[in-house]
Amino acid sequence: MNRILGQSPQITHLLRTLPMIAASDVSVLIFGETGTGKELFAHALHSESGRKSKPLTIINCSALQLDNIEADLFGRCNAEGVIEYRGRLLAADGGTVFLDEVNALPLTIQAKILRFLEVGECQLQGSHKLHTADVRILAASSTPLQQEVTEGRFRADLFYRLQVVPIVLPMLKERGGDINILLHHFGHEFSANNAVVRYSKTAEHCLLTYAWPGNVRELINFCQRMALLNPGKLLQPEDLPAEMMPEHAADQHAFILPPTGINLAQVELDLIEQALEQAAGNRSKAARLLGISRDTLLYRMQKYSL
Image 1 (cartoon, rainbow, N blue to C red):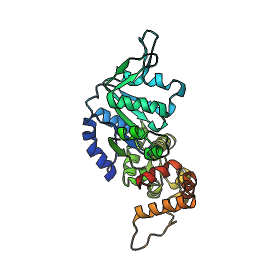
Image 2: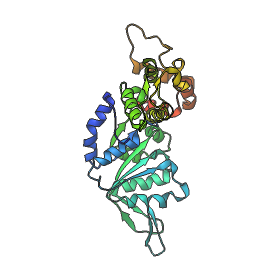
Image 3: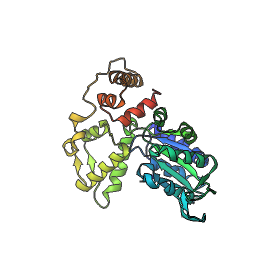
């Protein structure tokens, strides 16, 4: 469950550059849709770094309680200036901190995070003394932060300080033959002492052409469900979830590929621009026109620098 699996060009490139990124102490900003493996990649970076003997501290920024966020992250002192509670950033001294969904941090805390990133120091609640810690910061977002900066919800200086090394994780449907590799791996992993689930050619075709909107996380959950409910069975299309059945699959030729071929990236860009124009710039409406989530639209807008 903790290995990055795949042989697609995107994953191969990431695996090739991972040791070089891990060896450095620079900040890394990981972009990717929900379920693409951002936390898994953070674990890989930490485990190959010089800080691997120390813990990796994972902080889900979207789950932090707003009324206690400063003390939770940095800590709190009593009236005499003695530390009563060492926040998670200070407690991670010598290790690595992964700020998941960093876009959820309120602007007031973003300023303190920026200071901590720049000089490794912060001021705890109840004290005027500065406290320091040596921590490497990894961050992740499923929302394009450049768009958040443009709309005033994220500090530009923190954005640029975090993305010394930006990493973009591909969606599962963009990873070609990796789907088969993952199905085989997790099929065996979840089979336990039972026979492994198998797929007929037609069922396999459904899975390979399915869009996997939940990405690798959705595939893992699917494999676990199939192993539990159908141990050792040769699955047919009718055994698959309804959304994966042929009538829902992506190969029903809603678009006919011309014999001369197309520039897929250009077609995608053109459709996004048309949707935004029809929606008068309303991103939620444009996403509905394209049949995707707003986060997916924002992700692809960043991909094409829109």
